[in-house]
Amino acid sequence: MAISKRLLSQGHELYLLNHGSRNHELPDGYHHLDVGIDETEKVKQLLEGMTFDCVAEFIAFVPEQVKRDVELFRNSTKQYIFISSASAYQKPLSDYRITEGTPLANPYWEYSRNKIACEDYLMKEYRENGFPVTIIRPSHTYDERSIPMGIHGNNGSWQVAKRMLEGKPVIIHGDGTTLWTMTHNRDFAKAFVGLIGNCHAIGEAVQITSDESLTWNQIYDAVANALGVTYKPYYVSSTFLARCSDYDFTGSLIGDKANTVTFDNTKLKHLVPEFCATTRFDQGVKETVENILANPKLQRSDPEFDIWCDKVIAALDQAAEQILKV
Image (cartoon, rainbow, N blue to C red; front, top):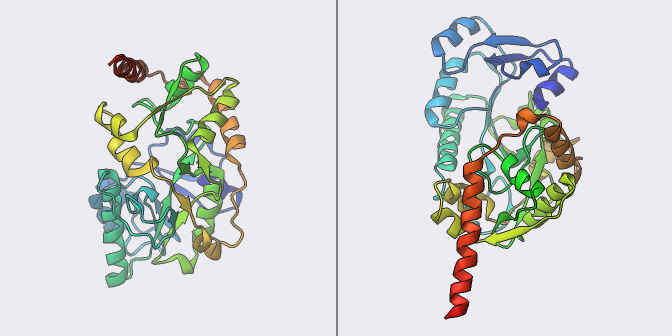
């Protein structure tokens, strides 16, 4: 949404190919193609004879989807931007400082392995057939609709915020001291738009993140401050969390958020010299919290996750008591 708004504000001709659940939030001036990208024959009909300076793909997760895109846009775009993921980088990391040259290998998360496979296919198409791909690897990007958290259930992060508001402890993986990077979507949009039409970005992979590094304790404390409550962490090892739930914490924690990471954005700043992330996390998350508190539709309860949190905390407390009795 932030990218679309920025493009429109700069006078670009924008086509949105989707079913438009949030298009009403945009200012006038875009063209809407009311079709899903997976409706291949309808897409072909709608796009017949059209050419684009850039096609951006945000919802491809497996190689079959990018193969479809290559066939659709091979002769009709000057640039194809694929959104990959920083979770594709090597786990465990040999160096916490990540550049685009950090190896891609994640044995813990199928999502990440699929993104790697998509990248491999697209770069092969670039090398062998000149397909004009640019790969973007974002890390944890957030907006005004969801509070960024490390651990939450299937209904998103509101239940964690609700626990905070109710004075309950919230589960933090590890001891909360590993470093993480949060990037506001406004800042992401600055870099993204700067890569569109950039001839030096063709055939390249570029990561887009803020330069701000935060511990998970700092992240949750900023959320608690925005909510006007006290941060009450309950620390649990990532391995234990992965073993005692049906949530995919093996992938999302051990394969991603449990690792200390900092990102070197030198390459991005070379390609987009004017880029600078200007939204500090405590300021950005305050905007997010205020928007969610003012919009009940964004407050998706998750009682199942809430019960699971209480069970984990009770089980560990009981185990500690039993050990002390021995």
